[in-house]
Image 1: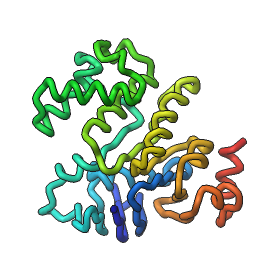
Image 2: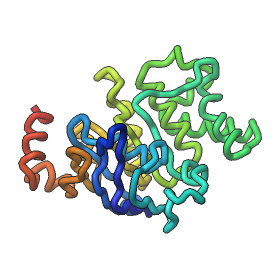
Image 3: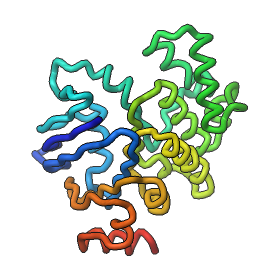
Image 4: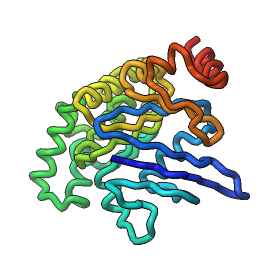
Length: 242
């Protein structure tokens, strides 16, 4: 479904953030990316969705190289949705309008159809009663669920999540993770950068462990959490699971 070949990313002064990453993502799979801060996890996701321009390599989606200058990136972003750490909601729009607006602008839906689909997605994330509210009236967890609903409304084939619970108070994390668990059970293809170890162990089919811009372990959650192959992963788990 998605194939990354020899992906590299360098920033200022030639500092390399991603180093020769090659990985394939299968349909209906949940891949969790773990690793210490500064490992390049978020940059990796942003390169997949072309929010960062890779320095070298190929990203193949439906056998097309999305890094090719001739490729229409808008097609990619319609089919690969992304949910960020921050919510990026429009404060002067209602919750319903926040979810419906991309459907009207990108998919050219009539406002009535777009709002009906937006409401369906809000109900899916447990916020069917919040359509007329404004973002300032919501908790952080509710805002993140609105952001997930907005992405889902576009009917993406792949969902990217970049630490979706990192900005939330601990008591708000569970509701967001429950929504993501439901998506996993429905077979949604997801790539998730997360620090929620229990969630990664329970939901993922695959763990990618990154350090210094490289994937140094690619394993099942059962094997990764019970007997990691590298000393770096062992020390990471010891600190993370305290």
